[in-house]
Image 1 (cartoon, rainbow, N blue to C red):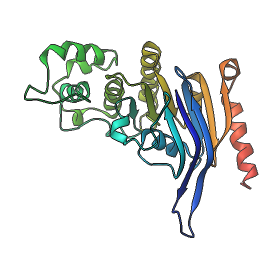
Image 2 (tube, rainbow, N blue to C red; image 1 turned 135 degrees about the vertical axis):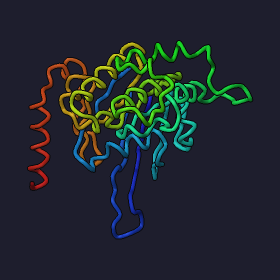
Image 3 (cartoon, one colour; image 1 turned 45 degrees about the vertical axis):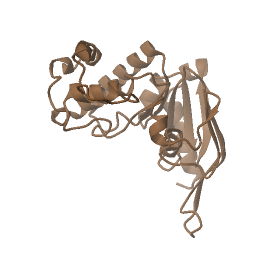
Image 4 (spheres, helix red, strand yellow; image 1 turned 180 degrees about the horizontal axis):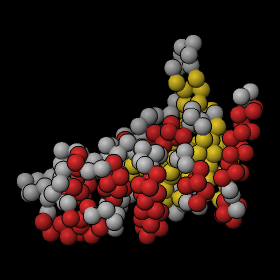
Length: 257
């Protein structure tokens, strides 16, 4: 489904502070995979997501999506087939609009706007049905402004909104990191349920090693712009948190820490 070929990415290019993060980096995402991506700070996790979503451009190389080169495609155009949920619950929704207005915006993404009402009343029951699966009572608060919701409620809504249109790839950018443990657990269960039901290809960056082990069909560990671990199938099923911690310790020792 997705291929990154010979990607090069520099920061502070042409200065004494130039850093090469990706150097001829290759990465492939197969259709239907749920990939967990882990790694220390600065390993390239977020940069990888930004390259895929079009938030930043590679300095060299190509990004291929379903056989089409999207390297130069604008971020807003990629949003038609790539959904993203951010770490900050405040991102991904409009705080001054109600739940129903936020969902109507998502429902109309990519469509031409005329003089018809922004909220189609015929779609309200559908919106309630979608939010009811969150188990947070959002379906009974459709006219409440999103800014009045808790962080967990906003993140659940952002997750629902990201999958309302026919996206082909879901990007989860540490989407449980800013939540308390209980809410984080609930959001992760909701995430897994939605992904399984829709069969949507997913790439999830997380610092939660348990989530990385328990969820998804494939696990990637990144270090200094490289995939140093790539595990899937039965091998991933046997993986433990201690295995991942051991790899982190090994890297730390190699770096002289």
